[in-house]
Image 1 (cartoon, rainbow, N blue to C red):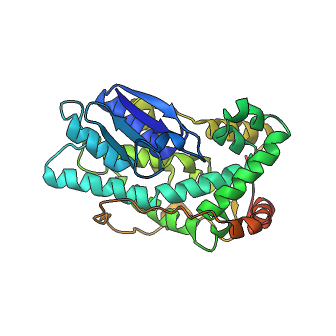
Image 2: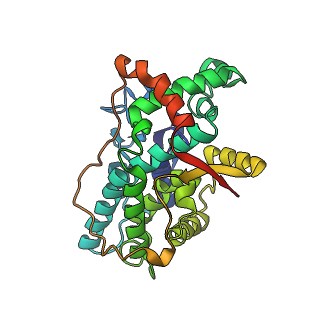
Length: 317
């Protein structure tokens, strides 16, 4: 029995859940407090999720790709996520860590931004569902608690600098390149499902609620590929933030997705970006910033600016 310490909606956590299920390994989930993370203190040297504890070996690990590599090495008799020869196995891991570094953080950043723009009170339901018996998720109270969470997240992930950091543009270039790589293929490496495919399908999740990408003419095939994998392997088609935003959009008939400083081109107007050669990385880059008191003094102004002056306008259904 492996213990998985998780924030259920995390796209990195879903990577590990999917890997455990795919390999047929018995596991149980331990939900943690997103801010204190006290439950992690005795199983990991840091406080990042996902983390696992394996009583069979007394091993405690964090970071999704090293966890999946551990599962592969420790439980080789089960379904493999590293098929092929040694070169292909190495390439699969390179893809995984590269996507963890370049896709995962940006997708998380824009996914949270979308929640703040369209349904900010959802933050309390995501982060504080059980705190004080759910008191902070009650109507009116959750407006305040969600705003505070949004301000803390803004400092940690720099949502107020999305435009300056060119997050939309960088992710667009990366995803178009990956989409072109997948044209005529079913897998990123070789012709069999692997940890690289699992990683890409999971880390795309937050972008499913970001209209700029979900409606992108050059990325329709990539999202179809993802949806087919989710259905084939019986994964959840929607997490709570996807369901909540979907209902709100259907009710009011619009979403916040018109990125004022970028204009779509037709699909055929996007040039070929060449082959994909993931860098050799052993560990994933981390984009989280420390939360300090000085920055939090500016957080209310930055939060209001993001909510009302982000440059991301309405898109009508």
